[in-house]
Image (cartoon, rainbow, N blue to C red; front, side, top):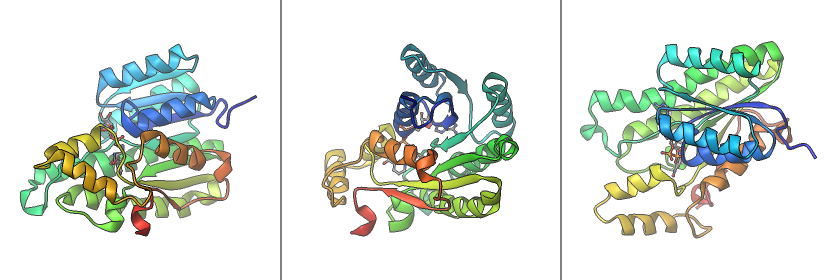
Length: 255
Ligand SMILES: NC(=O)c1ccc[n+]([C@@H]2O[C@H](COP(=O)([O-])OP(=O)(O)OC[C@H]3O[C@@H](n4cnc5c(N)ncnc54)[C@H](O)[C@@H]3O)[C@@H](O)[C@H]2O)c1
């Protein structure tokens, strides 16, 4: 039986780790062909190798999602290999864990450049082939913190708040072209990014327990939890869903 993404070509930024890697595995299991973009070259290579070993088609591209020239070059390489791009998951992201007074302009720009500009640049890069094909699904990654608020993460929260607005405006601009644009809003997800954030706390174990307690479902999320939400948004199951923010947050925002 064909998978839910049979022969679709999916680009996943941040595909070497966490949510991006879990989504790559799930997409591959559903028949997708994958292009993984990550600034961690070894991680992207290892994930592409794992997917190929499992029988999927996958390529790795090392680079910075905030670098316009690299993004367009990578898009062209993906088009040369696969001939089309059907899905984008823009998962590359990071945070500094600092309030405004503790954030240098350099730190601010670096976070915005990955989390927000990287999502813009990759969306723009894939919109061209998607418009020609008359179909496509773009999934951006927000954060529960951008909606609920949170301490000492100013650039990160600002970037993730803007992701929601970018999702909505692109959804409106490209609906008539057959392109859907949605965002997934994770809660605290047990990935290397979150573990680094806990490690910045004075008491990492207490930080983990406090974060866990914020979820009415009583646990941290897994990357696979989020991947299943992304699969829904990326697939034809979400054919009438655009401009939406799908919470995969264990109830954080409802509480
Ligand atoms: N983990 C959480 O609790 C959580 C919660 C809400 C939102 N998110 C968001 O989910 C997304 C994925 O996070 P994760 O938890 O899987 O983190 P992760 O650190 O496990 O994976 C992020 C990947 O992005 C890559 N990356 C970072 N900056 C890059 C750049 N400029 N160019 C190319 N690649 C880059 C990293 O090398 C890494 O492989 C991020 O956008 C993050 O903000 C995570």
